[in-house]
Image 1: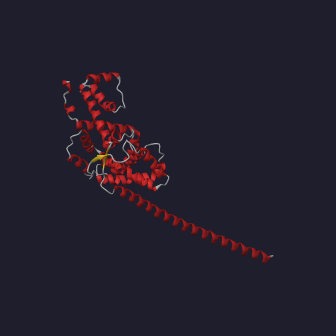
Image 2: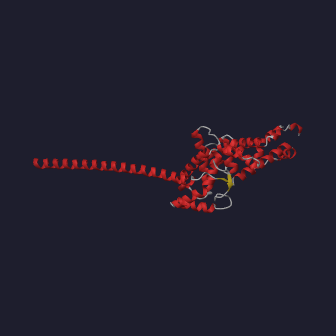
Length: 123
Length: 194
């Protein structure tokens, strides 16, 4: 294989798929080199065959659609249960915090009333 | 294992149904559950085909398809309708396959290649399908996504978690391997004689 063929080896597939245009000197080489021409033809055939695979659809064994939908349903339910538990936990903690705050407020109120009573007695 | 290739019967064929799929996807995104189910029905076979070509194993392909639709369902809110729905779905499928093959980390027996080989690979297309199945998964993923499904280099790189230049190098290697496998005679020619 000549040096020029080596240089082109990387580019011929790109020429075949239309993503690369060879510079003039390389084009001249290809027009005179049977090996590069053959390689180019082979890449074109290969790419055409691969594009043809795009239109083929392979049939899965029956039940895939229902499996997919059931999977999404199951994961959705798990997420819903998890969020329900999280919500319950948040509500419980919220209630606990509210009760604590109410208790503290009550204690402050009682304490302030007591101290006010003591002031009146003293006067 | 699948009985083999059949003519395209779903709406992902280039001939039609693309607008309908986009409309269904937008309806599904806006909360229409029936639209999502219809989308799954219409696209399952083509998604499965891609998953099977990437994983080379029927059981793995089914797992990849399930994960693909779960991610699609969760990600529908991000679907803007500016790209074809199938392209969007194929990108998810490519990403799922890549993750699946990486995390599984072992090479399963390829029943796809075996079944394909049972029939005489008389046509070039069959030979290509066989040769694709025999490529290493990292090379196969790139060439299938680029040359069969026409995904752009940057999308392939993004979904496989590699750089664009790495994707191009892998594509070149895959094409070269495929060509020399299908047309071995050219490399045996004594070029000095030419």
